[in-house]
Image (cartoon, rainbow, N blue to C red; front, side):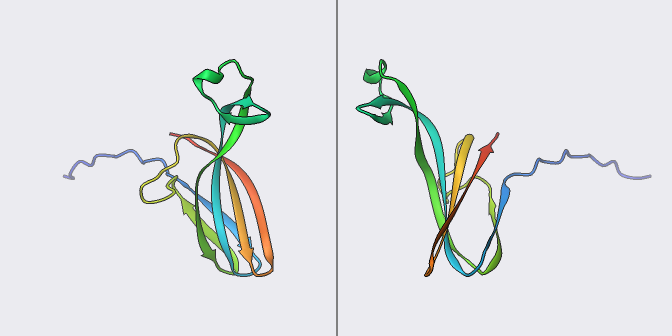
Amino acid sequence: MKIARIAMPRRAPVGTTFRFTVSEAALVSFAFTKAVAGRRVRGRCVAALRKQAIKRPCSRTVTAGRFGFFARHGANRVRFDGRISASKMLKLGGYSLVISAVNPVGRTTARLRFTIVG
């Protein structure tokens, strides 16, 4: 006679892995930006306030967080689970990621969009 086993449902994987390649060692920074609602005031898109309710709406970009590290020559991987630091995590929603690599020769940037879902 065998002992009964209880099947536990598998948890969905959390996070993603960003993969990128650099031609030589570089200082790499990840900047996470998010589009938020604003109001057009004096030709600029500013944070929406109640007293500006009659102004035209617009979309502005704010930096949600950033971190940097040293990348080695060739292929690199960064596991990302939505956490920017030990105490800060990105909220649900759509983001743009700006990846910048800086070495003594110059700077290179790449952009991508992703969504954090619950």
